[in-house]
Length: 170
Image (tube, rainbow, N blue to C red; front, side, top):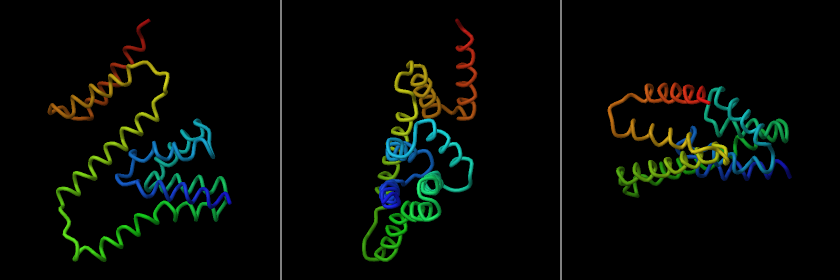
């Protein structure tokens, strides 16, 4: 029964996991933290999933499945997270010559959905009782990279340096 619950949770994640990477971390946390892991264990899971090759959702599914139900749990969770994308790609390929697809509209839809998932991830990963400083850094970093020609690497390094300097203040 545990394998079925894990498979269903990761199947749901696979349905909306377009964009990959960090856009899906918030959804993974929402699905597995109350049921199978503590918040600290989830943080470790994301660190491990990020440091191993492959998509975060796939690595997380394999690890959670392995921890909760062994080899067959890992196999079921891994297949569940990729089942819907494989089905969707197969159907799209099969019917692509019969259905006109407006590429610009599809691109805009995927961008909007991915942005929403990334914001959800940011919201779930920040501590809820945090001071507004991380939010100010996030907003300032977004504005600098979106509306100026400043390289994102410099924005990240500058944010870290400013935060360290602010930490030295009493």
